[in-house]
Amino acid sequence: MPAAITGATALVGVLGNPVRHSLSPAMHNAALAELGLNWVYLALPAPPERLEQVLDGLEAVGCRGVNVTIPHKQAVVSLVAELSPLARRLGAVNTLVPRADGGWFGTNTDVEGFLAPLRSGPFGPWTGKRALVLGCGGSALAVVAGLVELGLESIQVAARQPAALEAFLATGAGWSEACRLEGLAWGGSLAQALAGVDLVVNTTPVGMASLTDPAAALRCPLTAPELEALQPQTLVYDLIYTPRPSQLLCQAAARGCPSLDGLEMLVQQGAAALRHWSGLSEIPVEAMRQAALAELGCG
Image 1 (tube, helix red, strand yellow):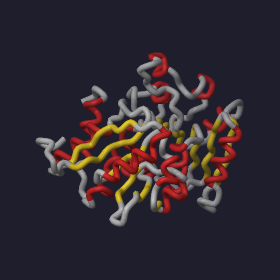
Image 2 (cartoon, one colour):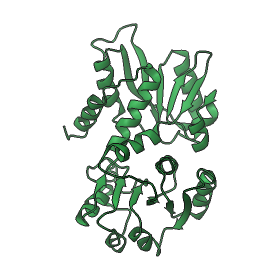
Image 3 (cartoon, rainbow, N blue to C red):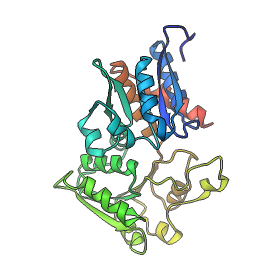
Image 4 (spheres, helix red, strand yellow):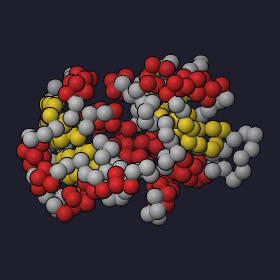
């Protein structure tokens, strides 16, 4: 946060419902302090029925930028004046930038955030590899778009709801001629699929810590027989970052699998959003990372 909030302090923030649990305020305010920007980043709860009203109000008070999280990423698409090609393709927005001539420009930095640890870490190259994505929600769209960009040979998407999976595959159809995108009913064939892939990405919330459900963090999206199908060379990437590690990553480690959680994705998508808002190319990513870790009690 700025040394002192004054009449000149500008607002940025994150819209969601609920949003009290967000790590973004700690993360962004650490970066703003390092950059010396007289901005403050707040969590801004917005019920779905008042989303348009909230966006209009933020524009009216000169808000410098907004992150968008659950459940508004799809709904906000129809409320912006302009969309980036990526946001239009995904049908999801997580970053809003005020336009000089009014309204909001909507883009998506989730893909960039998701890809960051896959590109900079000890993993890859990914050309010709195979992936299995668990879940078919908005996060899964960003994941699949990123995997297509990496040049994978095939991506299977496993989901429990056939209609949702069909809609997902229709959205992703034509994204790449080189990468085969297939749907998989979550059931008996999942273990066979797990045994034959190089990367597994969990985009479901199963295993995420919950204040209202203490047992939630003990859950795993895969059953014991499915976990046994994992091969030791398979990278398991769980978008969940609380608890650290998730139950899925604990089980994967027991199988000898390398793993990634979603914290770096959160940090990198936030840094990309801050570049959009500030126009600066150099963002103090390490300060953001350390602030997020401290907020999680890992500092």
